[in-house]
Image 1: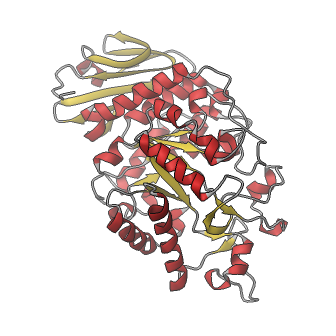
Image 2 (image 1 turned 90 degrees about the horizontal axis):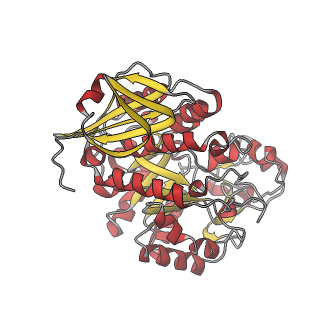
Image 3 (image 1 turned 120 degrees about the horizontal axis):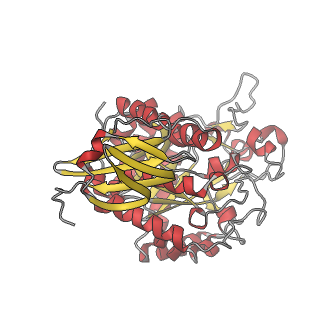
Length: 443
């Protein structure tokens, strides 16, 4: 399926995720606002906050998810188990605090993205609005796999309630985007109508779906601009880092996506709140910061939207949990972030400034080290960029015919790279990004 063409704003986007509970020691919106200039310094242009509307405080263990129980945090207030969709949770601050955050972000040319959690809700919501949740034959709320109440989208009144909620933060606070939690479990026609209503007010509004594009490629016809690629991060990259899975699985994930939607836009990242939450004793920065940087280079150069999880600029390795108590876990900011920030800014400039990367097609390059090295060619007319990253812990001598056309080009970014006859050499966890010599793109 060929889906809609992405706008320039989507193509240029770089998203930075904030998990308020770990982003600052205070864990509040006001405290997070002070770090907005640092987010700009990474090159990001969208700041996305994990849910901060009121979480359910019901302590009944029956209604806790398995992950919530395993965390050992003993906190009933799961930010993805809500009881009031319109109210800012006092844990994080007030509506006025959020308005201040949005205004400060906009002054820095940052767009603000909120999280919508519509697949399920907490038991208190189910008691307040029994007509909005599904029930079993005994009249009890029907729980989903997370042990949360399942929202019933067959009820038109429920749909109107949530469409009103979608519009509320757009009109009241001036936000610019939504990330839709488990959006693929919600009927697509619900999203289409909600987006139609928003875009009457804000034609440039952006929608991100936490759902694989290959599962429902029609997502990007009328509702969404970007989809998650959990196969990229949750399966491929995570297992490359943790278990040495062959690097060519990234190409397989990409091919699978593009077979479903040839010009679709997917998220490209090395970590997000779920991976940090589940891998807290073995986070990717703990495994290898050098490997993280090589993987980030690929995420910015391959087609899609780069995404940064909070603390990336500090090479943070501390435990994070969306289930933590206030102040329990925090980003470790003792490291000097200047070197990583400089790399992220340079990657953002390449992502936005190279025609072949911004608008070009992607082709995975043939070479003899696919177990360890990922290599792509991005091309748009006569403009072309070659990117190769070594995700192994050993030097790789790579024979690659594609590279011969780039050997005399302009190096945009490199680490541990050396030209070689019929190919190149990459040190362990190193990379090369090079523009073809006869490129005519006016920069």
